[in-house]
Image (cartoon, rainbow, N blue to C red; front, side, top):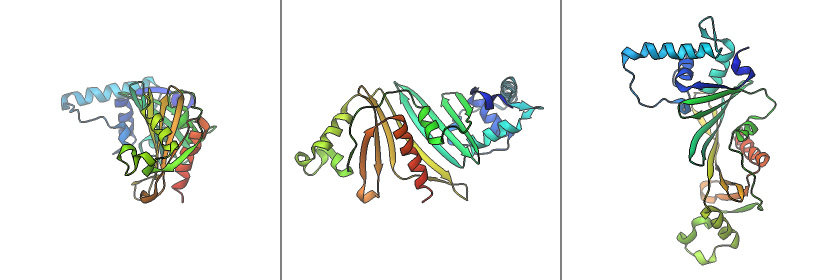
Amino acid sequence: MTAVRSRSVEITLSALVSAFGQAGLVGSHPMFAVGTRHTPESLAGELEDAAHGELSRLGLLDRGRVSDQFEDVVYALAQPETEYVACVDNRGEHYTVLVGVRGRVVVTAVRNGDRVRVQAEDGRQAPAAVLVANLPACPPAQLPRISLPQEEFRGDDSDFPADRSRLARSVDLLLEEPAFGRGEINVSVRGPGGGRRVADGILTYRDLTAGRVAFEVTGPEQNRYVTVTSGEDQALARKVAAHRAALDG
């Protein structure tokens, strides 16, 4: 059993991309793009040797190639059938969380700069819950559920700003409050041709002094609603799972 199956493994982005290449994966997930830096041909072999050495030290190779079990992990990250992605800003630290699902394999990757933490999940948690568990810890805000037409959130740009509801104004206050953390969550599935279908709607959160608040935009473009709720972990995971379920409709 490879190391990544029994514990989380921290790996450099270059070594992970090398593993993608060894597995024959071209055009892997954009989360793992290495940018436009040019690598001189004279250094390419040296860098590949370094990546190979890192994979070997981490126990991810078998007889000089990516092991079968790590190959399952690599495929779930590079070409997931379903993906759950969170782009996170936590007190100015930016990172991305990907929970990739391919068949029965569920893998989490957290990329922060040139480092990636990889964990093969054991199935005890649903993928949506795994994603939420990898967000920064923050207590939920205590507030009632608020759902209003999106047009009510136009504020001073509204045709009748004085007529906006008390609830809309209360949400204004939440949006005006400084946030020390925030994030956006997206769910998508891979279509038959390899393209991705992204769930409709927008799901975000803000970490405020009062706690985490979730914001969700749903409905057709001409009749969109904004729902504001407490960002409690289980409730947020249910919202993420609902976005996934909507893709099966």
